[in-house]
Amino acid sequence: RVAEALADRVILTNDNPRGEEPISILREIQSGMARPDRARVIADRGEAIAAALGDCGPGDCVLIAGKGHERTQDLGDRVIEFSDLDVVRTTLEKLA
Image (cartoon, rainbow, N blue to C red; front, side, top):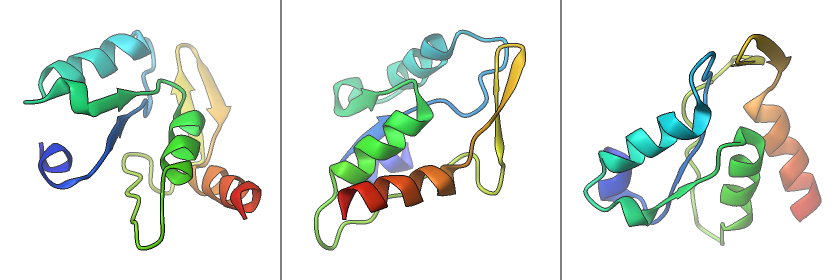
């Protein structure tokens, strides 16, 4: 609710969906918003981070919440290597 109230843009993405259907989790979160049409849903976390950074302009700030220092992501019965920081670095290098 805070992001919806204060952010110019909101992108919903997955954290650790584990055995739950990732898109279902995101749609449920979106349905709880006052203006669900304002949220962009991108299930792939790396793509969501890249989209957020690609949409930025001078003076903009991006908040990437959820995983923090974690270096893995739980997807179904798999645990994959994943770091928000690595995605940010790679994306910013491509955008430079």
